Every structure is written in structure tokens, then in C-alpha cells.
Image 1 (tube, rainbow, N blue to C red):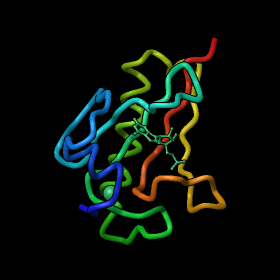
Image 2 (image 1 turned 60 degrees about the vertical axis):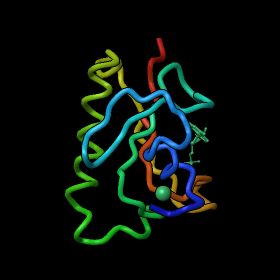
Image 3 (image 1 turned 90 degrees about the vertical axis):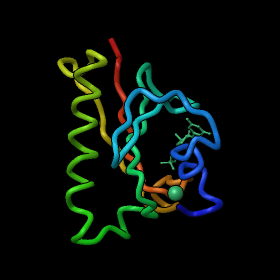
Image 4 (image 1 turned 180 degrees about the vertical axis):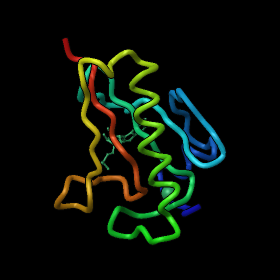
Length: 109
Ligand code: 5GP
Ligand code: ZN
């Protein structure tokens, strides 16, 4: 946990969020400023700054984040039409919260 990290605070329950899934290794909650009809954030509990910082030892959690996104898309009934999965990496890539997360965007008609 990084003390000043917003997503660590959400994971620890210090700041509320609209969670749709939790397990021991990751959480999924709704983005507060949705950029699509369905906009979820899949967030590992481990504080990793960005994709630039992942290590070999993180391969299982990255795989789980992607699987969780796939399962959430199915649960939200947006799989068949299609959706976007997006990792923003560092400021130039549009990252604003420096705790690794995967955006799931979809639900367009
Ligand atoms: P980034 O730009 O870092 O890839 O994405 C961060 C996302 O977090 C943005 O889409 C933003 O709308 C979302 N966000 C920022 N603050 C909060 C918050 O307090 N709660 C929730 N649920 N989402 C947030
Ligand atoms: Zn964090």
C-alpha cells in the first residue's frame, strides 16, 4: 500500500467505490467519470505503478487482471458486441492514477 495512492485507498475501503467484484488479488469497480456506457477498472491489490514496472513475478496477476476483464464483460453482457481493454502507461499514455489498472470500456449499441 502506498499512502497517497487513491486506488490503494479505494482497495482498503478508505474511499468508497462502486465495486462489482473483489477477490484476494484484485478488485473491479466502476469508473467515476465513465467514458462509455460500461466503464470498469480492473485493479490488482498489489501497488504497481504502471505496466513499465511489471516484473516476471507479476505475470500471474497480469493474466488474472485480463481474465477478470473478460469475465466482467461476459457478466455485463457486452462480450458479443465487443469492448476495449486499455492500459494507459505513464503521463504520455494518459495515465493519471499511478496504480496499475486495466480499463474495460463497452456497452455501445
Ligand atoms: P488513468 O487515466 O490513470 O488510466 O485512469 C484513471 C481513471 O480513474 C479515470 O478514468 C478516472 O475517471 C478514474 N477515477 C479517478 N478518480 C476516481 C475515483 O475517485 N473513483 C473512481 N471510481 N474512479 C476514479
Ligand atoms: Zn496504489
